[in-house]
Length: 517
Picture 1 (cartoon, rainbow, N blue to C red):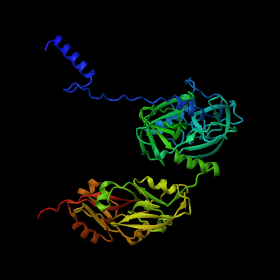
Picture 2 (cartoon, helix red, strand yellow; picture 1 turned 180 degrees about the horizontal axis):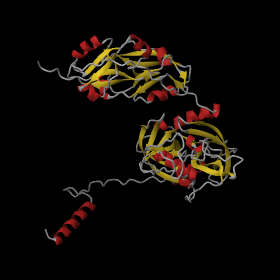
Picture 3 (cartoon, one colour; picture 1 turned 135 degrees about the horizontal axis):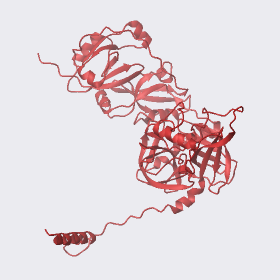
Picture 4 (cartoon, rainbow, N blue to C red; picture 1 turned 30 degrees about the vertical axis):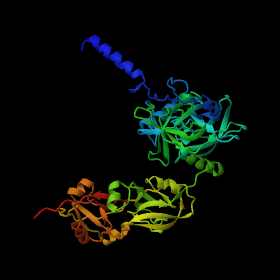
């Protein structure tokens, strides 16, 4: 085909694409309807006045080097930026305790930089001037007309003074009402009336794909509006809450600002981003407003948040574990350990149980359980449903109040007498556990792993593990273990309940086919 004819071909093809399709009878088929993009102007006019700028200050020496940072950013902002996104101090600064970081982090608009509490402070005897310096910038929104404002806990954490600036440029010194670090929610109060309170929405009605927008102060730029869609709901990032994931641009300073739906209602608090570069990469996370409001109500009433606990450690239930235990689907929370004397222990919950319901509500993923329990008032009597040995059991339990985390103590172990080779279908050689060791470990049954090979090695078993159950059969001795292991069907996965240290979990394993003699 010549160059000229190719040009004619391309022109004809382009014309054909532009013209509506015509059937043999000459009747045009309806064209694809046009879609109008949303207009956010009215929405911003409505919600904008309810969004505030929050800046915090700390008492520091006048010799602080601000390094010529851009307007709206100070050393506190950049310290927090490097700490949250890279897990390292800002270049030129000494490391401080309790670093965070990783790929997920707050959006950097927090105040707990090196100038906050716990950092270096000037004493009255220092030659430096003990002056007030900005330590952070963030956002917030007005909860009520009488001056209650919600923001992120990391925005106001460690601040000596908190200032709230309204869209009409009025600035107020705020009083900290309460902070809940677990949910990253904080409430402050300013002395003002007739304020434009925001409308609270229902985060349970959020739909993936709907338009949303964020209003805040990224990099100190007040009343900046960004828009996008909800990318996912119930996103588990390892924190206490199931986040709303969006593609709305969120940057340092947006922390604590509202996530707004098309009805002008706040459905979340912009809190975190996912980043490998330190900047916005198209994924941001917001705290669901219904969870935040439950926290805010307690903070306004008592200044703190009280949560329930049942004293168990849990893990996910994989499909292999569910299949091998006969569980209809992979759901629930696998109990890996139970605190002695705690509510779960008193209720009869055991390591290896799978909690499928709490107070009649289904546990879809493991992280649902701590949220449900945490939202339950201490001393409440309720029921927990567990899956154990192929059937469900309803266990009554009384919820206790959450206490500070305890550090588990490692139990001493006696050196086992290893066997040379694991000859059974599982690839495990085991021995009986001495009575005194069983007593110290609070074990009713189990055998200790002395050697690992084949299927067990591939599944991650280790010498020193304790085998407590194979399928639905409790293991009470090494002799019984061998009998059970030799009778397993090599065509089916089997779940083995293993204790390692203080944690107990099911490990799915497929037995090897016996060698032909």
